[in-house]
Image (cartoon, rainbow over all chains, first blue to last red; front, side, top):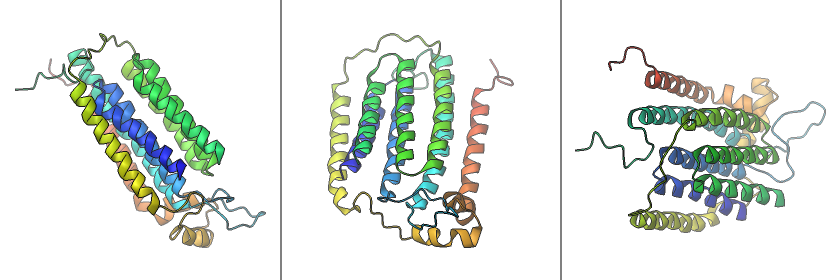
Length: 112
Length: 172
């Protein structure tokens, strides 16, 4: 149970960083931390005591594996996270080239 | 049991450092430290495929983020007028933690998963797909459409990045 609580604390650090920081790169970092916490939480839910990694071995015939389903889903989620981060960083680089700042309060030429 | 706590506490420390450092390059590298801790934790949780993927993705995202921060000079951040935002964020985060703490009781205990669907995969993966690695049997065979969607998203994001960063054909 305490591991789940630590995982929630890691997620809330990412959430706080996403809400409070005004630097675009810091916001991207906060989103990345929250994503790590979610991935870790799913794998923690699928862990089984004294079990093996889900790879069938011909010589050690055991059926005592950890849950393979969350691992397969999180494998997809990690790769999608990379794609999302690449798009966010590309937009941030364009914004820096145009406005010379990462501060979201200064980026308001379209406002009003 | 203890090693999981130690690694997650190290990840929390790295996350706080990454959040609070002024220099953006340093905080990007601290985020890399958090990702490496996540890789170790995946290895300890018996997920070698995930550890490999996380390591590769971590290195790639570190390179991408360094591209965003290198050569950037920012004035120091002004701190006036942010107490309202700060209080709002703290209330929001504390409410999230309280609700998630209440929800902890409904989860299965650590180390004894439900495995309603997973036990079926474990039983039938070798006979139905012929793959010794059950995770690859799930992503490439049982849930192949998910992987097709993942490849589509990755392709779309590559097209998006190319459309955003290219310079030819842009009017001055």
